[in-house]
Image 1 (cartoon, rainbow, N blue to C red):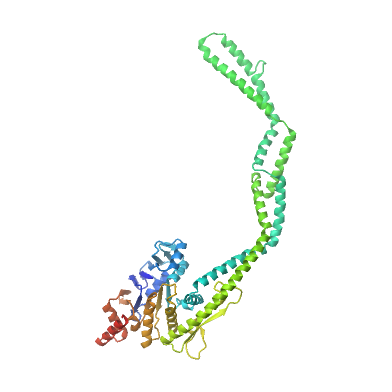
Image 2 (cartoon, rainbow, N blue to C red):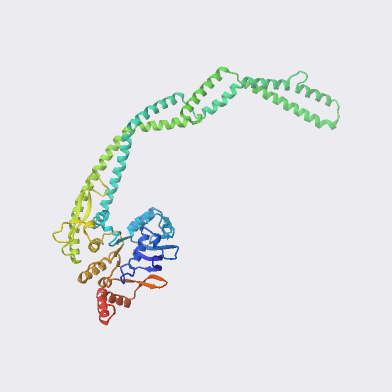
Length: 555
């Protein structure tokens, strides 16, 4: 339910902070006082269209915050939780900011959001009934929802909707597979050829890198062997001029000196000779490993050529070929079984459609029974509301085509406002006042099953008075047992029924006009009812009448 509404710099409202009770709140004020401004501001937090002209004069921006208690609104809690927007499972704050440059921003619990999401959440929290664009009762989806809620068919309707979406998803998969059958056949042939070609090559992981290394060694084998042999000759030859010969000759000459001071030099030269001998030995072993094999080189280069050719063909690197082969085989396996998938999907779709038809037919029968009951009850309420000749009907029109998310039929509310008049669609036949009373009648009857916790009626009592006005007030108070009611009214009979009474005042001064809303005390309520009863001046008689009306209504 709506618990708080704060308005800042919105049209004629500078600052306003309102609290709402859980039962019936009435809003009154003199004609032209701006009673609907409060609802207009509320509508902005529910996703209504914004305009920079709504900002108060001299202000840079307008801001409206509405706070709702959602403790008993499971649908709203689930919606918020799915989007990770829930801070407190007991309340939610919707905020709308409008700036002079025409921009508008929306927030849910402080998180920036789209206006569309604000509208979706708003529809779960509040239902505004007026003579204008907020009248959700004119929408066929609302009419269907009310019928299903009244007949306790919401679960069945939801399950049917899910089944419909399952059918759609299955049909799409089947259609995609069937439409691609020719393309898949060509693809299958190509993949089969590629898979066979790769299988014949049997290229192993890291094979290309190993072959490249081997090719380099084989290609330079003669050059490397010659260079190593030349180095060995320089090191180890017994001929005069080789490194070992010269080093040995130097050692012999220095050893003959028998001088201890030169011993470190002898040690270094001896160590050098040993290291050179070891290096020479290692070079000899390396020379033995230098394989000069033209035939093997030819085979390696041939294998590499095939690998490079296949890599160029697929526009990949040589080391990526094993991964490509795996991918091709996986796709090939999937395509080879696509025929099986089509058969399975065909069977699954037939089963889903059969289930849909059975459930949809059951739902249609139940809707027919519920519609007959609702027609009688609404027509009876309309008679109580001063529309004695009115006849309310519900048309269940078969939908052209196979399936729909809502079932086999469209739900259309029809009304005949006068005896002998042919019933027509609610949106085409009913006047503003009639529409409000029809809405009131339906809401009273369906309140026990409605999922919307707050109902707003703007000028619901247009065109009625006297005894009918008393009935309207009584019905609204009755409805407040099941939901929070906010009612903008000009009738004292309705105002007297309110648990909370807000009065809108317009203050016109040379500096400008402002609007304020105040919550009335019990004495102030009686005074306002007396004003609404009529007359420029309040008399003892009008006060007594107002007091009696208020006391009777509050019993």
